[in-house]
Length: 429
Image (cartoon, rainbow, N blue to C red; front, side):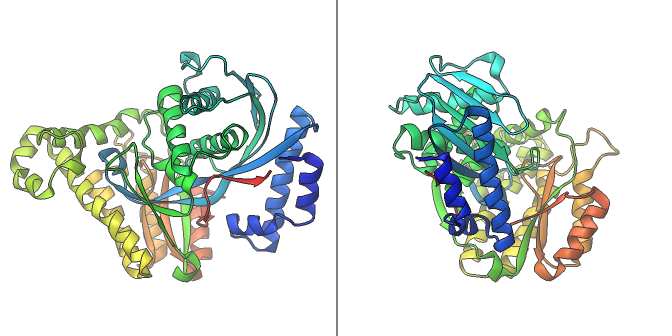
């Protein structure tokens, strides 16, 4: 840990510039902007909690799903990557049993760590995540004390980049450094974040978001054993690929969509149950195809189609990883387009069917395909139904593509991202 004065002098002297360039993939101007962002987090901390005592500064990224749309909850394969948008947190222990945490532009939250059981009144609120993370770390044999933290984020909320997972990994990284001697590895911190979100925050998410944000870079994740997912690092050189990664925010509203999201794992599970299994990854595809006529009658056509999507998408995630490893970027793009086609036709998560006049995802996909003119690739991103799509755009087409998207969906709706090589990290200590 180091004093605020020393931290600011290191930033001013450029001592963290190499770290910033590595994390964010910036040029000199971009590095200066991120340098100012780190200084801003420290200044916010000093303003709220005073400048006495030593601090640490951490960063945890948002994430993008690259392949494996709705495969994780069936214990399948996913390909995901961390991105160069993140949560930055400045923190120090405060010698009490209370966590005091402020997220920029939000009010202060306080969590008394003497009580680590879930509180119903905290569901869907920040204190639930903090309490859940502290409880999970304590259950692993560490004594988590109180700390003060100031957080700032440029991960857009509702963008499909998982701002919640980035926040969880930032808090977990702070606690790991302050109270665990960095003994928790990245996957363990991810599991802690997922536990907090499931049990305390009240959101039944899988582990994909937290693993991608915590481990960093591009990772292939096999969820056959969700308690111990197999994580494989993938070296994806975006510059060598000649592609730019874009996430387009369509402005769709997730309200009223809980049921349509829940129907996907429910219907996939109904197919698995016909084979005496709990998830589709345990069902042989050839046996599924042999019983197709029967399954249509017992489970319905949409459940059958969603199962078809799973079997194909589960393979594609592995094929995409192999194509990237071998530098076969044209093949990778074909697989991404195939993923999007399968999600639209078989998984059917590009339109909720609730409001007939609102089909933002479908319009965005159609517009992106038109702008790409047969180049690159485009697919629905994340859960679907509303929210975001993903596009891999040839760099020479990027300017026109971004302008065309934002002419329809509005300024700053096309986020041009880079893959970040690291997950949750301590920048200054």
